[in-house]
Image (tube, rainbow, N blue to C red; front, side):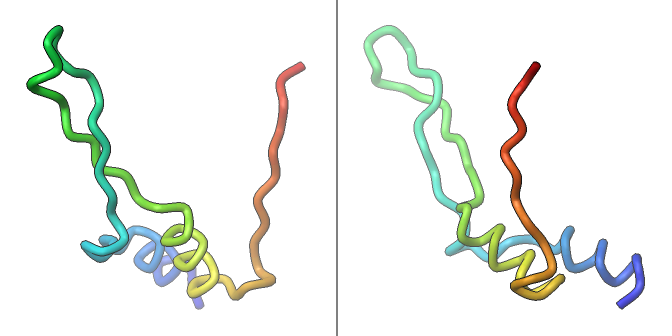
Length: 65
């Protein structure tokens, strides 16, 4: 797979069922809020598995100094 194919796979839109919603900032009486869409971790892991294979990528946690 060439670099363009990899980029196209990684940049493809996620399916509707892979997106979840949360309420962000709200007004003082909490009757209105900002809807925040986010992609689930599982959807991202699946995308990486499909693109690079299950053993072709890793996730590392790097802490500050």
